[in-house]
Amino acid sequence: MRKNRLRQIWAEGGCAVSGWLAIPSSYSAEGVARQGFDTVVVDLQHGMIDIATAIAMLQAISTTDAVPMVRVPGNEATMIMKALDAGAYGIICPMISTAEDAARLVSACRYPPLGERSFGPARGLLYGGPDYFAHANDVIVTLAMIETSAGLENIDAILEVDGLDGIFIGPNDLSLALGEAPSSDPAAGSRAAAAIDHLLERTQAHRKHAGIFCANGVIGGKRRTAGFDFIAPGNEFNLLVAAARRELEHVRGTEAGRGKGSASGY
Image 1 (spheres, helix red, strand yellow):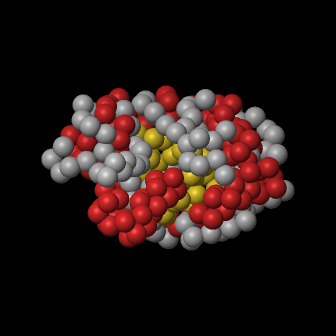
Image 2 (spheres, one colour; image 1 turned 60 degrees about the horizontal axis):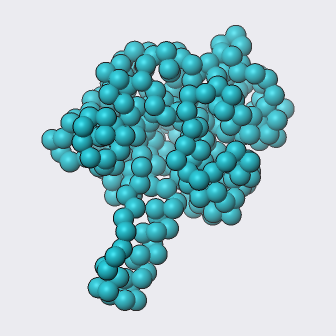
């Protein structure tokens, strides 16, 4: 079976940097994947992407060295299995609040006797290879999104779930859950900033992996220095909007500041 480069990066003590796709386009997916990202995530939760388009995007990512991953809409076994059958080598699942939630996620990603994943890997065989079934349980990466107050409270029990590779923090939702304004980079001294530090510390204590979504590469670099080993520095839509705004400012100067919107990520 094709190796999972993400696991190799982690085994070497490195930090993986991931592209993030919200636009339903195999063309943009291929373009992003060719920029040197270690992994690329197709976002089925907040991205404007359906499963049929996601398959074409996974195919486009598969023409590169980037590891294809999917953020599923929720902790629903049939969708998780479909994403894996489509060739995802990693699953990020939102709104994991308890150890039971995490166990359901892991079970959906693993074939019996370790889980309940149904056999029918379809495109997984094409991408992974003919011995996919024999190795998939060890190759597929599972990350639980921690973005609720319950998830924060139950973090140690969640991290103790066998087969869970680590967590992925959704800082905007976590901020909201703690009674603060959504922010991908909560201010020092805020409850969300303290929660992020705590989640990283507990994940490292359990010798698992900690990822986080960032609005841009500047924030991502800070998170990498702090010890996170999976960084998503913004999605391609927000990067596109930011680049378009910047070029407009070059042409118009200060006039571009009139009525411009904001795209801070999620």
